[in-house]
Length: 171
Image 1 (cartoon, rainbow, N blue to C red):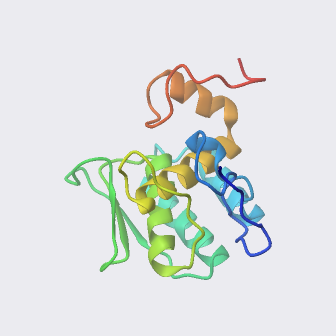
Image 2: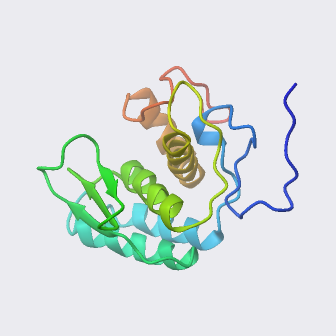
């Protein structure tokens, strides 16, 4: 049988389900309020237009201070392959275009490398680091804007959350 761990030694961003199961967007619930505020400010700034890289870098600097770590450099370059990546040796997040969920995901990788994080358990053959970054980023976005998150899931713009996922109170 599965047993939940005690929460007394958990970080402020401890997983919703210590065993790591359940929908990605519900695994983390206790984000630091400063992370929420910085993330809300990023969404309000309409980060997909204008000075995208500067907006993303500003968010990374603010949230890095919350977790007492150096901010990774954020680079948005069309030549970046895939959805994006975190480059530990350069302490850099690289994305081909501005994506809030990718920014959050890659920032979590920076946290994993530079901080002691309580991570969710991996499944489906993924590494624990990937599973944890997915859960942290999608939980943060869902916490900020459940309605927008649900719309993006239905539109197929959120990976790892099935399009037919129900969102009680939002449907």
